[in-house]
Amino acid sequence: MEYSKIISVTGLPGLYELLSSKGDGAIVRSLEDNSSRFVSSRVHNFSHLESIEIFTVRENVNLADVLKAMQQSGTALPNGKDNNAVKAYFEKVYPDMDFERVYTSDMKKMVKWLEILEKNNIEIKAPEPAAEEESIEEPVQEEAPAKKTKAKATPAKEETIEEAEPPKKKAPAKKKATPEEEAPKKKAAPKKSADTEAPKKKAPAKKKAKE
Image (tube, rainbow, N blue to C red):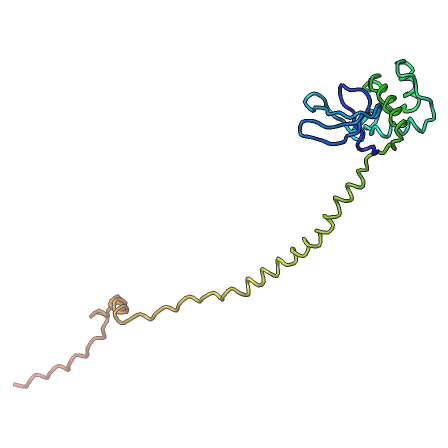
């Protein structure tokens, strides 16, 4: 039996093995009497033990860390009906627990759950987030070279585009003006006036005939 399949069900005592899930609930098996039953999700909530966290004076810890500390302490489990004994037990085996936010009822559950798990010889295993992170990072490392290749290919494409572009057409040479077009220019040129013309040489005066 795997620890990852063990769940607690609100409103029902003890622990259960999740056999199958359905849209409106799940089929579970009790770890105390091995009876199977359907539990409606409309009435009850399910919690995997491996997803439960416990408040401490530092960061929250997984339930598996507390259960293992209880196993390794070598201290006998307290009487679940004695609130003071339960609290004194956890103060000894897990002093970092935040006793203001972890209620005595929760501590009693942990004592009961450990008894059930040990009775069924279920190995307590905490989830391994490190393995999940590695599996997520692997595809990223494979994609990195592809991105570099695309980056290198970009300038090559630009060069190809530049080479393929036809040379820019030169502006068409201006046509020589036709005589008709030049005519106005000639008319516009200033004419030499009569005053500016060189004076004509006067003919020598004829000598008067002697009388």
